[in-house]
Length: 431
Image 1 (tube, rainbow, N blue to C red):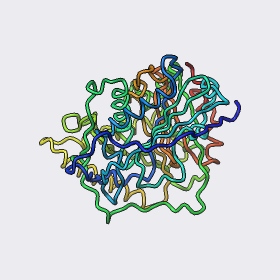
Image 2: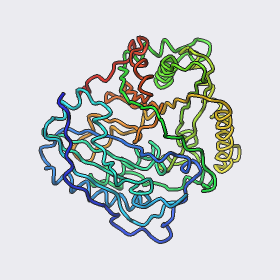
Image 3: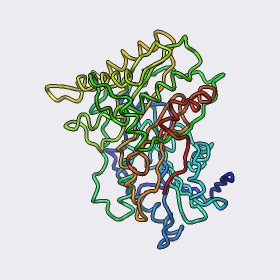
Image 4: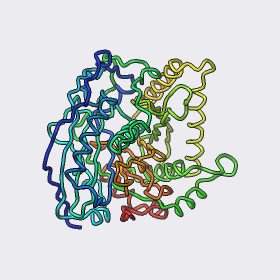
């Protein structure tokens, strides 16, 4: 495929259509929000041509509806100030772009991570404090389009990003009353952030180069993998995510050349569906908790990893039980466990790998009025080292894994015969 050339043709600041009331002008971060790295949670939504609406009309509708949506998501138009957001209606960034040397169908034949980054509105003017929301609408020569969305991870996890997209899409369709609005109250679960308490920042000097690659598990191969990962005594029917996580973890450990360091698997869990009586699915922020699986071996077995993942899930379920139903009590227990885990990790050198699942988020329902997306991708930007993002394939049955590893580890990982027995490396997107 010819190198894609994305040309930005306009950049605007979109402000909320109504002024944010004075009593909503400050949003307090939770301790979990505060701990998030200064990156963006990002999604890419791809759409085929709609002959009934021009590029100009599309951009106008997107900008107008974004302005209306920001009145509900008012912190996204603000600026970070320490451990709070100054909800000052400063605005979000909207970028228009086009690609004239490549139709969308050609781009989707081999959608690599580096090319995807060109569809994001991140540039040298972006800082950790503003803007907190950026959008880029890129039009292909065939009439297809991509919408790249970036929200500061300090404000939004993947579920929050999905909620924003659903509300914005419904507003664009003129159906904003059909979806529930957001709730900004992450401190109802986790304690408020304290600026005096921070986690150590990784030294970037001499940092190794990382690369991100895409691996796709089709439904038939997923079923084979689930059978391979099953154990009659403990987990007879592992989930798709458990099975893929276990295989990727096994291959990551095998690809790591340093056998002297302990390996650590982190798996963030969305807490909203786990405590539905206390947490709304539209609660915005970082409402998650990472379970930790330590491994001191040079080799891990898929079946054993699935068992460990099930144990961690059961431990989390026990941790969030609370007879009185107090979210504050549950949040304090989770923070205490998080600090215990962190203490273990800093007591001796280790190599972490995080596998986070975006599966079952309704990203493929993001209809702005010109049909549902034909393909969706997601990650964080800039990419974090040693992270895998799992996301549904466009058939709703398969899983796509976006794996970020150090370059030398990736060269071994992507050649794993065991991995390639179940996954394909960056196949064409079928539309």
